[in-house]
Amino acid sequence: MPPEAECRPPAISLDEYRRRRRRLMENLPTGAAVLLPGASLVTRSRDSEFPFRQDSDFHYLTGFPEPDALLLLLPGRTEGESVLFCQDRDPPMEAWTGYRLGAEGAVRAHGVDQAFENAERDARLMELLAGWHTLYLPLDDASALRLAERLHAELEARPPQGVPPGLADVAPMLHAQRLTKSADEIDLLRHAGKISAHAHRRAMRTCRPGLAEYQLQAELEHEFRWRGGSGPAYASIVAGGRNAGVLHYIDNRETLRDGELVLVDAGAEFDLYAGDITRTYPVNGRFTSAQRALYEVVLDAQEQAIEAVSPGVTLASIHRGVVRDLAAGLVALGILAEDGEETPEAIVARRFYPHATSHWLGLDVHDVGGYRQGDEPRCLVPGMVLTIEPGLYLPDDDDLPAAFRGLGIRIEDDVVVTCEGHDVLTRSVPKRVADIEALMDEK
Image (tube, rainbow, N blue to C red):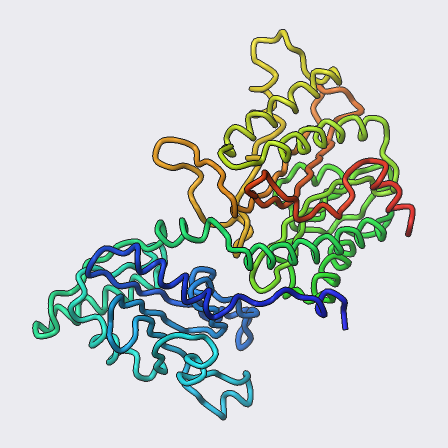
């Protein structure tokens, strides 16, 4: 058995799922209920589907793993506040596609108060939603909106059922709740980061001139699965040479060339929680002097940014520090001048570093939660998990020194905010030049 599968952290407990539902209901106004649909299967080609992944919000509140489910939260309801609708038991179909929990299994295995199979859904929903003043649902979900609008029309046509509820968006409330992670969530993110780190070290050891980008991708994704992950948390980026200048390069079809760098941005998903690591290193295992000089500018900016992560700090201030450090590094290398019409910081932000330094990390690789509170940047608090990923992407332009043209470098780690400051979840992947070169020598 793979070692990571043997020492996996505990799954989220039923008590934690109950606490999450309770907390959301406590934040609802009086007379409000929640309607939240799960994900459905998506056709890949004709009669085959993409592997099923549950909707992140639905998973956060239920842990329920099957498609075509629906959750109602009905605060104060005597017969049960959490009601789940799920696929009907269907033994002939289950012989083809796998066992279904059914209503009894949903209550037993996932701790909801009540469950019904989808055959009863339409009739039960009319009865359950009568009398509620407001129905909170994801307003950006077309299927949820269609369902809510149909229910609204049907309730309106049945006066004894009561006034149909108004609609409100559940996302701001639910996503604010998801932003701060529990200790068990952080353990799962740490494990996703650990699996991801093993994969990146494997890729470094394997990398050599002549390999295709997709072959390095295969090394990464083999390790994700071998160590118990469900696969990649997002489309893996393996960008050799100038491909690194395409921020979301996922073709991964070209050959890795001697003397060039390769930028690898990839992370494993474990129990739906995402790892997200980027490393950039020489295809042949040795940095040129120009590659090393530019790499160390990015590395220094990243290390300074990680050190800045602590409660009360904002991502906006961390990003400003990164832009300042990158600009100073480019000035020191003679790539930028300080006496032009435009400041080095402005040039970096406009031309060489077009993305933010950080994003939230959790059930989604670009996780939910606002980056501002009102008119001000949001302050970090313990339990938030984020990435730190500065980069420099120098185009092949005549006004740049020849040795630096076409170089793309990004370095990314996953960081949790603690009461004392921070903890780097992905520190085991080498990123100092000497450490990268030593690991690549092991192949």
